[in-house]
Image (cartoon, rainbow, N blue to C red):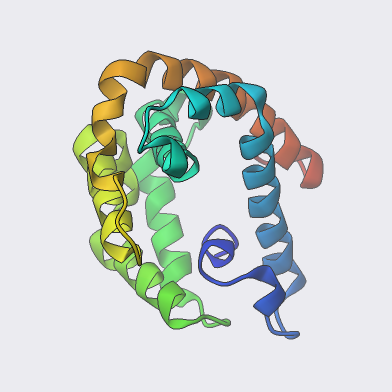
Length: 179
């Protein structure tokens, strides 16, 4: 939930009764976002995207990086992705903390549709971008963004290979080294 909450509910809106553990995981999410957005290779990759994609480059690259992670999951974790995903779905289904309508819809959709392993395929990643496009309040090019992998896929893979170990090290420095 710490990974979903900041995308659906501003951290300042979290009620006082939220557990320290959940606040810690929200902070980890924010750290990951901040490090990703400030990473020089990510910034250069985002600038290299053609208009109109550049404006939405942060969202597009987040999904592309999720795709990289899922495709190469076994390189980063001994636990198989489907097993990890089932643990996530169980935790999401059991969650009974604060949530707004947007978070409730996203949490329910993740549990019901079992999206996480789908990020490993281009089709699954494209579905995620289409879903983001549909939920947007204004017109975006997100649904068409997978075409960028034809011209930028190698660069995306290289940036992710550089970025992910740095993110992992940052998260491990804020935890007990379990990631």
